[in-house]
Length: 240
Image (cartoon, rainbow, N blue to C red; front, side, top):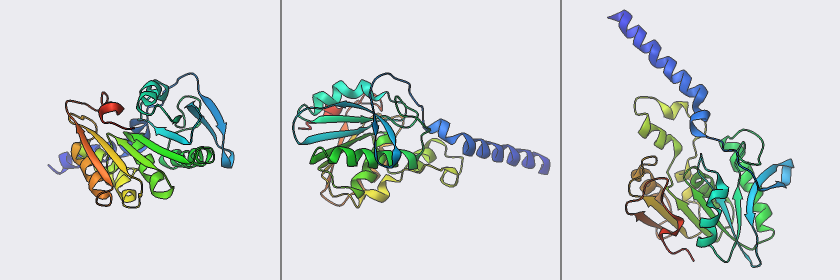
């Protein structure tokens, strides 16, 4: 019996070690896609962006999902924000942006892109979808934005991982935690949250926990009937 328990413990620890080593390959799924502009930003950053510019003070910065080719979202964003310029960020290792994705790296890119856009547009809306919702929430807690829209968001990546891997100590193993709930209380911008009724990736409880983390009255929560994680639409509610 002792030998069996030792074998089981060794196997469990091996799985934990494998998860620790491979966790970023399980979180990020870099997509190769053509097009976009490479911007030279502060600090020597080179950042790929899909953009659509037009006259006017308003701009939208979009942070997509972990396996998203963001140019595919451009038509939907144009329909949702017809009067605003659009900047869709390419994560490190995605599209035209070199490098490897990490939470620290993606957030540094988001800050630099915000500063670039804000210097050209006095009104900035942030849109974060799935993985990008954590980036957008943190950015809105540290920079002045006019509006925040979160699509299928989570309260923390650790909580989502714990939901899917209940038998593993993911809270101890996870490097990129994306603790959106920690930053939500510092957000001052009016916030809209869109959650999918049948989300198979982000538990509804995680989206609801994030909603409760905002100051009372600042955020509105919309549950989109029948929607799943990948087919929820930005046009599910009126945005303009």
